Amino acid sequence: MNLFFQRIYIFCCLLLLSVSLQAQSGNYISLKQRTEILENKKKIANEVDLFFDNNKQIITKYYHSSTEFIMVTNSLGEIKTYYPESNEVGYKQITELSSKRNLIYYFANNLTDHLGLADEGFSLSSNTFENQFYVTLWKAPSVLKGIETVKMVFENGLPVYSEYLANKKKILKKIYYTNYKDFTQFRLPLKIIEISYMPSGDSIINRTLFSDVKVSSSADNKYFNFKIPDNAKPLGAVKNK
Image (tube, rainbow, N blue to C red):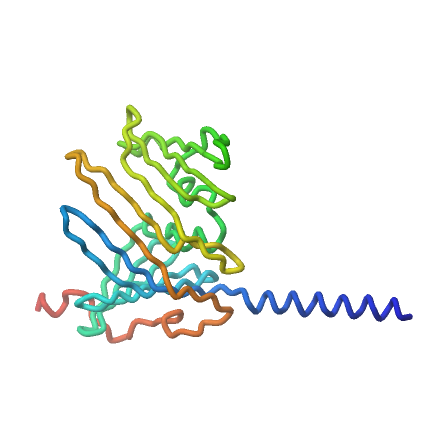
């Protein structure tokens, strides 16, 4: 009898642990994103509050710019841009900017083996080990001009480096993923540095920093369910009158 109750006790503990882990997990991810672009010795920076609903696959971004605006993107690439000050809204659809093409989507869903390359039509051509690094090589689709292959380097199962190469092995772009942090369900690099090499010999450096990352099981911020006012005017309608 004691053994029976002991098993019941262990089962209950495991059940409570499972519930606890589920409570810690969540499909609502919010974070602050700062992007800095260095080009021709000039730096441009912008700050964004990003809210990702992984259930609905909707990304809402609040841009802290001179003219503040809110951008809502779904998995189809449908984009709504709302300007609170003028109560105007713009609509467009760009498949390549789908919420499922955003890095947050790939990391949050642990799709880090290709980080979107497969969705862009790249095909895996080789995979090897170089010391402690796992290296994959991806061949570009024929419709994508200018890029021949992409090299991805992994350490401890996480991408740490990507390299885009043109014909004759010329490097077009390098991307470094650093400062990983564990959020139970997934791991996210808090710093991403992208270096694009121009034909002129110059380069553009893009640094993205993530901070204040929160994962919740409930939509605890209004921007997860942001709704554009029904009386919002089409963008430019007032100016065209």
